[in-house]
Amino acid sequence: MTTPSWNLTIAYSGLNDPKISQDIALIEQCIEVLHLHVDKRQTVLAMQNAIQTSEAAGTLLATINTFATCHASVNATDEAAKAMVGKIAKLNSLLAQAFTPYENVLAHAEESFIAEVLDHDSGDVAGQGFQLACLRKEAETQLSIEEEQLLSAMQVDGRDAWGRLYDNLTGSLQVTLEHDDGSTETMGFSQAASLLYGADFDKQKPAWKAIQKAMETHQESFAAILNALSGWRHTEYQKRSTVKNVHFMDPSLHQSRISSETLDAMMSVAKENRSTGQKAGSLMAKVHGQKTMSPWNHMAAMPVLGSAEAKVYSFEEA
Image 1 (tube, helix red, strand yellow):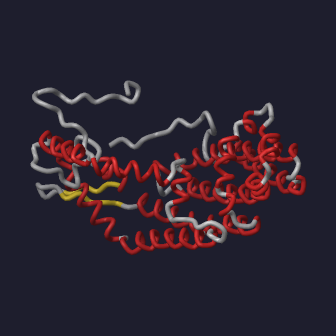
Image 2 (image 1 turned 90 degrees about the vertical axis):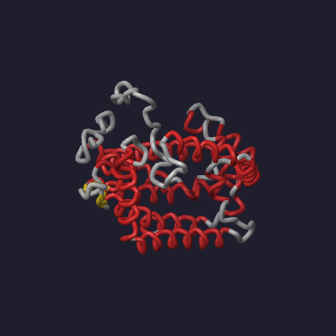
């Protein structure tokens, strides 16, 4: 399997590109500006400027984070990339904390104030209508400014750190495939997982079993990660339920821009038509020459039918 590569020179030449340091300095300046004018946040002009400042800093943060994440995705042991991801996570938290007082005003202000704020030539401001409408729906579950800032600060080395631990574990995990002929093959977790989506059918069962075995080695760590994240969410939602109760599903529904009624309708339709999915599974098994699908091939590619030869597309063709 060929290790993927990224051509990211449109953004930066490398993790040591001086432009990254320059952009980080600009982000820090944006954060300082937000703090400097926080007492004027009740005025339309100050709020419009704050939104533009936050958007500019957010774009730079997202660019650097994507750049570093792409490097880490092809080499989970790249210490420079991991350090950059951690640094950007900290900066993102500082930006969120700096903008929190402005966000609090936007969540609770009169509609007339919001309309004046959105009346701006810049798309960075005028285009915030939908985001602000979503924000204002959560006004009753917002904490105080200081509490929201504290939560943002703690997330970096709390909630988000658990996610980074999972990425580090799976990124460095090596699995060993045991083939029917007695031979073995060692590869990275992601490479083994990719086999389950491909057409190398002889390797899928060994890959699936190897993944299960390797994951079992870290089962206590994975359980701790899931329990910690679940506990964090339960505690946060409990704190936010002072005025309006926050259901465990509410934040996910809000982020997906759907209501609980929509989700219930989707699940009901899926359940009522589950025979369609079951039929599809049976047909897939038949194509693979089996009576039923196995855990290791239900995501597999379509096999070549008859005497035809498989067509492998290059990146350019795809």
